[in-house]
Image 1 (tube, helix red, strand yellow):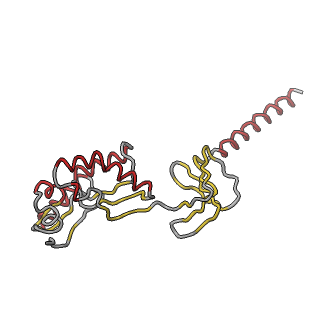
Image 2 (cartoon, helix red, strand yellow; image 1 turned 30 degrees about the vertical axis):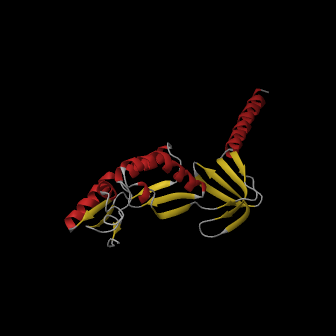
Image 3 (cartoon, rainbow, N blue to C red; image 1 turned 180 degrees about the vertical axis):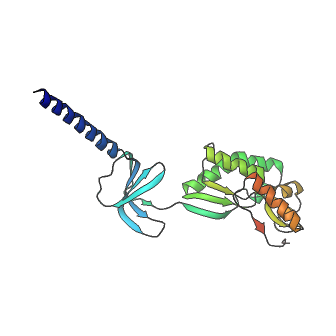
Length: 217
């Protein structure tokens, strides 16, 4: 009788452990986006598909019926799901807003947050901003990363490297010397070019932008 009781208790523990494993597998995903038309980065199209996401990454795409479970589910019937768009050449700080200190600061604090959020709302998830004031654009990148600004991921190049009197130094910023120094690095020799690259690299830019173009009238 005692042996049967021990066997019964062991069986209960086994079944309860199995049930716990099943419950854990039920919650294996953080998010399901279901019943969406899914277009993948390779151009494949899935109708009425479900996308399973865990730890911020896509783990599965299932077309049609499925048994996936998650903590949260978004029903996307009639909607299309596709990879985020990337703009590899974007001027986040527009020239017309950077001609003097007052308009520049006003743009950064009041206008730029709306621009960034608007880009994200339109499906642009990453931008590479070219030719910006170095310290300012690095600060914007940090604020996007820590969540104090809402918008796409930001890849920065900082100030653009150009020849002395080249674009955009001697046309866009011809009459604005302070902004010209912020937005460009004009170099006349290989040594000066290397110095500019090292400065930007030490500051932590994601890439270097070299403008091979003369100034425009």
